[in-house]
Amino acid sequence: MPEGLQVFNDSGFIQIDANYLNLELKQRGSFNLAGSNTANGGSTSSGLSVTVNGESPVIAIQSTTFCCAYPLSQNGNSFTFYIYNGDNQACSGEYFVFDNSSADQASDSGFQVFNPQGRLVFDAGKKYLRVLDYWQVDDNPGESISRDYPGKSVAVVMCDFGYRYVVAPSPADPTNPNYAFLQSWLNCSKTQGSKLLIGDRATYTNAFAQKDPGMVTTSEYPSRWLVVDVTNY
Image 1 (cartoon, helix red, strand yellow):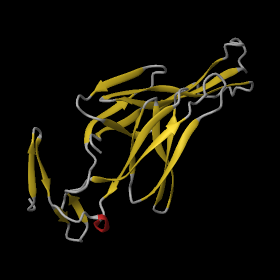
Image 2 (image 1 turned 120 degrees about the horizontal axis):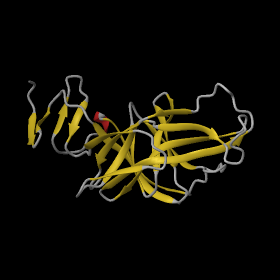
Image 3 (image 1 turned 135 degrees about the horizontal axis):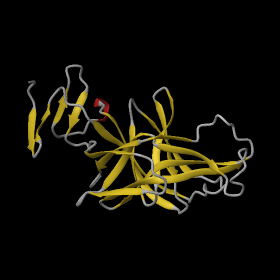
Image 4 (image 1 turned 60 degrees about the horizontal axis):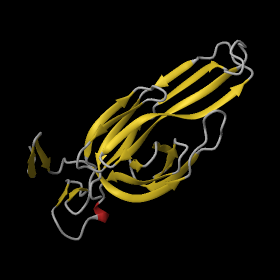
């Protein structure tokens, strides 16, 4: 085992040495989003793009309504994430961007560890990604599930984009095989202090006249989330 600092906890210990690897807090910001109007034929969605430079950044969010944040595009070392408001109410929130450590952003003092290549792997003056939990959520339209993490301020990282896509008979003409409703649901999260809620939110509903007879009527994919502790971040 390489030499280093050992920190003991209830799960065993953490070894901080040249092989230690974690993501550090690179950027923090706040957002305010208008409500979206995407159900029952509406087409107005509300969101915000966040662009950062880095190597392998991830974004965690806290929000007062059901929102989600996901990678939108990459151009070289420039990464753009999109924060989407899946609710019809306006919301406010914060985002936290984590990425690999870099020596050129080291603190001026404190305990620091570098690997043999000279890369900073730990800096006591920095804040790092603190994972509390991992969720996998199946899609059940209209349902939300929750967990509480007492004493913690929590945020969430969407690891996998969960959705549910449904083609159903139109309420306006349910017997017409060529007339149908298309509806998609997207997993979103909401934070209330130490409590996290994840649920399906309708993203778009639209009536259309030419239904493809071979169209898949239901398609779904579960979402996966990291719950992270951002207390005092």
